[in-house]
Length: 597
Image (cartoon, rainbow, N blue to C red; front, side, top):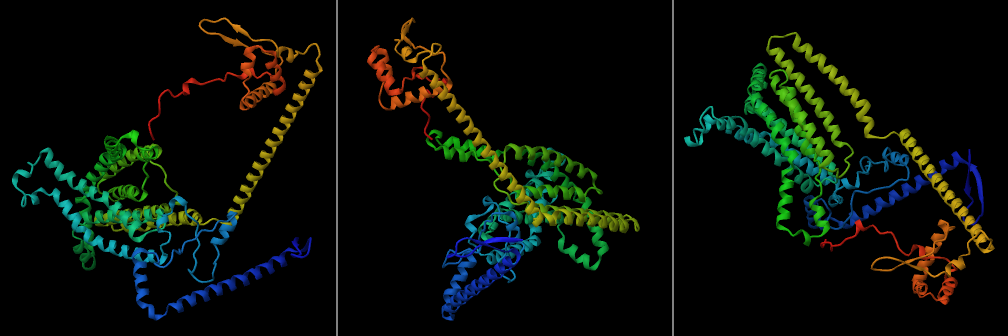
């Protein structure tokens, strides 16, 4: 194939050349220019680095300290983040799948997030600083799981009233068998632990936004989801092992059989705690979420202490702004309930029944909240769904392992390893199939699919353009027909045949006062052969006459012929009195002044 290209600036016209050799030469030329520009940038960068020198060690140390603390360089507002907009989806996917600079990780390309998802305050933070701070936080949180057992032990020990009787006076300890004894023994530790976990996502969000300074809100949600669920799993392990983590780790190395026996006993003994936990989650937590008490209290308190009429409309609308569904704070609760139900499905079947009731209630509540209460502040691109898929399969592997251990402890020497191997192989095959068919293809868009989408968008634009041209041609045709009818009517009126009413004679007829009680109204003559086009003409003529200050109604009311003649001369003999009274919708009238907003 051949293409037509320009001959040059001084030459006119175009010439035909072969397409493939021309494009290959253009690619080589552009590659040479890119390499030249790349070398120039590296030379400029080297000059800047040499200019700094070793004599400015103190200054560079201060800059590095500011950079480590804030993530932003002190001497400029430069950023390592940039956005490039392409005209086609194919060009964008091609840019994503190519190595731009030839150097590994020198410039990394990825799909741009939703503009609402970007934390614009953290855009100028360097990527290396985010990575270092995230590694620091991960190390601190991972080490904190070892000391988290102290907090969980302190909370769960509140339910042991026999131990509390050694430190508290007798009048504070309720009698066994009473309502308060059962409440403190069973539900008070659960409520305190859930109340503590309520603040944990808030702390993680502050760490992600203020210390690590993620550039997108979805990355912050993923960070919260990861560690929120990790600490819930830590609660499960600590409570099952009866707060003896170090002894359990030593028994794994010295006597694995004793560890398995301790694990099985811990599962049975801790079932009451997690049963109460699911009961509280099913009743109290879901109903508290449905009631939206914090927002209601805030709304009533603000309206109690502020004057509504003295606040702007923007301020009042801000009070009514809907909340956002925080995935990192809410989803781990569902996954934790699924984990508890999977672990205790065999040992204590009653727990899985309560977990099923929790999921039924939570489905009703959160469906209502998602439809009527919450709003979607941004699109995160489904980043949490990959974590959710991996977490779900991890729970499935854990539940099958625990079931195999229970079979082995009950003397099923053949059934336990058979179940473990067969079920884990089947779960692995399903996991790999899901990852191959859904997870990996969803991370990138194939070039063939992007071309299909571009072609479909192009066809839609062409159809829209043709429709606009069709509407414009139809409107032009209709306007031409209206002008033709108007000219035809004007010819009939000027011909003066006997069947056509003489408008000049009708305009000279004085108006007749109508008989009414209390006031007099004017009755104007109505022409029988007036078309809608003529009526619109008269309305336009009336507006034009009023804008010039000619009060035609006063001349008509005086009955003078000179006024009528002047009307006919100024407006071309049209009757504009037919549209002097507009149609008013009294239901929209405001009879009271609106309050200040």
